[in-house]
Length: 104
Image (cartoon, rainbow, N blue to C red):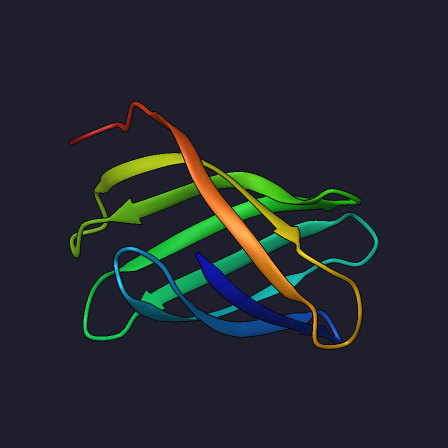
């Protein structure tokens, strides 16, 4: 996955590309607690919601894909980490260990 993220004032945004396709990211973070919420929107496709916590080694948490009627479709764990430091730092990410999803 290729991913560029920008953080500022409690908001984050970015864009990237993975095996599914090109996407944009938007969300928020709490500087005090490290809590992060992101939404990845694939261009012309579905979206993925991410809830995680930021730590020194990156952001870890759970991703979820929901049906249009808001039923949970799939979920799993994720980890996003910086590749280098600096103001234009890129990031890398992986989704792993898909967890069973509740289906209605």
